[in-house]
Amino acid sequence: MENLTPEKVTQLKVKANQIRKLIIEMLEKAGSGHAAGSLGTADIFASFYFHILKHDPKNPDWEERDKLVLSNGHICPAQYAAMALSDYFPLEELWTLRKIGSRLQGHPHRTSLPGLETTSGPLGEGISQAIGMALSAKLDGKATQIYVIASDGEQEEGNTWEAVMFAGKNRLANFTLIIDRNNIQIDGQTEDVMPLEPLKDKYLSFNWNVIEADGNNIEEFVGVIEKALAEKNKPTVIIAKTIPGKGVSFMENDFRWHGKAPNKDEAERALIELKIIEKNYA
Amino acid sequence: MLNPYLHLNEDIFTKSDLKPVRDGFGEALVELGKKNPKVVVLTADLKESTRCEEFAKEFPDRFFEVGVAEQNLAAIAAGLGVSQKIPFICSYAVFSPGKNWETIRTTIAYNNSNVKIAGHHAGIVTGADGATHQATEDLAIVRSLPNFTVFIPCDALEAKKITLESARIIGPVYLRFSREKTPLITSENTPFAPTKVQIFWTSSKPQVAIFATGHMLYYALLAAKNLEKEKIQTLVVNVSTIKPVDENMVTQIVKKCGAGVTVEDHQVIGGLGSTISEILAKNFPAPLEFIGLQNTFAQSGEAKELIKKYKMDETAIMEAAKKVIARKHH
Image 1 (cartoon, rainbow over the protein chains, first blue to last red):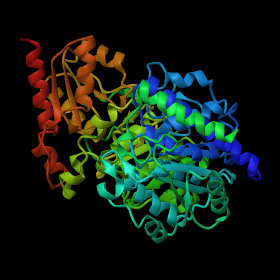
Image 2 (cartoon, helix red, strand yellow):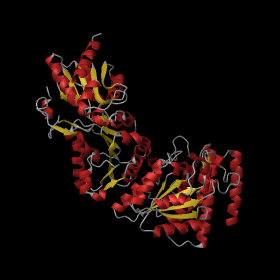
Image 3 (cartoon, helix red, strand yellow):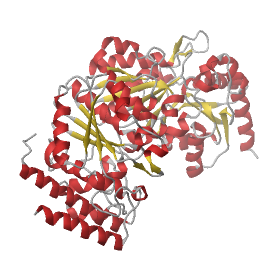
Image 4 (tube, one colour):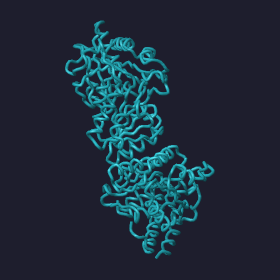
């Protein structure tokens, strides 16, 4: 990973904002999809695709690449936008999201779109799949780092903890989990639906290295990834606090935007707000 | 008579050599381990009874114990299978593909990951453990998944050949194994033809085709031999690949016989019987009778007792054959 200069931080912030604008446009055109989590993780996706990941968009199957697994597949608009901005495919293809014949399925499908590492949507399955990839890299002596992004809601899935136990037991250090801790899920606040706290202690007790960070602060997020990579003896989880709907005032922290797309009017208002943010970076 | 071209076990009706089908799987895993460094094996706390213990001893680096966690078992394998590995996952069929079916659907089938699922303790012959551990719906739930190949070996020797073959297939494979010792029907020299059905019992003027799968083939052959004494001529067909099924040959066989009986240690809904029905409904509608579990759960007991109680033994097959022949004439 290169050094993160102040100029690079600004560039990444601009990328994150571009991702957000694309998310709004994609969802509005699709007429359905998940706005809040996609917007909330735009800074994380910008950090990965434009700074952290060792990858080659023109050669998505490059054997030496790092792998980014998206476990909570419903926030794929953020990933699709980051991939398009990285030149995995043309930007215009984003407007095919959720439409018939599209490579951009409503939830990600690995064999439809080169560059996707997995197929996801049903929750709680991504961590296990990433573990499989980490084991394979370890067996082959490859330096590949496996990252997996999961939601906080999917911490409620039994499969999540099956995977957490396994990674702790096997001391998988080529493996980093990022939990998007935005405190919302479809039916409401996570702590009302099914309390997850103390989440940090749960992971500590499973023999994980645990780091908490602000997932909307790119400088801080990249910094903790570097810390995670320095841990060579156990898996790391970064509990990344994010604001669902980040960047669009009327969506922020409102669980009703978890599984909703903006209509034309809402999209216009959202884009006006995001354009103001972009001007401030210029 | 037994098909002379297939080098079947000629002693099958006199002194039958018994061996658990699952043993063939275990032997094949070790052979694969030696031949192919990509082969890895995972189990969910069932190393011994799923016969991956030998592999675990010989190749500890390529063996992973995931504990009692079948969803994790399937999804870790899915990750390995898209990372140049050939994972075999070993558990009881009621748990995998039973308990973890959606995980398999999403991360292995839809994701088209190169995972081989070994479902052990299939069928009511699992016996004393009772219905909780007797997988009798696994074919229905796996057969309906796109991208899957589904194999059911009839004995330990075929199990070994099928396991070796599954590693050559790129994509998801389900392998169904039963627990207890059953007769060796084939020999080392019996050719294994993946995706083909094989006629194990031939007659010059067959009146009915008996399609059987897995260890039930033995009962089908016993029935054929007894029916021959009663001057009823049959064909017994080994359907060891249930998906993709040999549609053309199944149709030709029923065209020749005019009627069929299906025999499986599985619910009659969704397994072999349904597979043959689907083919015939499309290509050559003909009377069929179904031997298998009749929309009920079985219970604890010895394998043979259960097979008799649930009307799946040679006597039941003979009755079904006579019944279906009678239906032909009306």
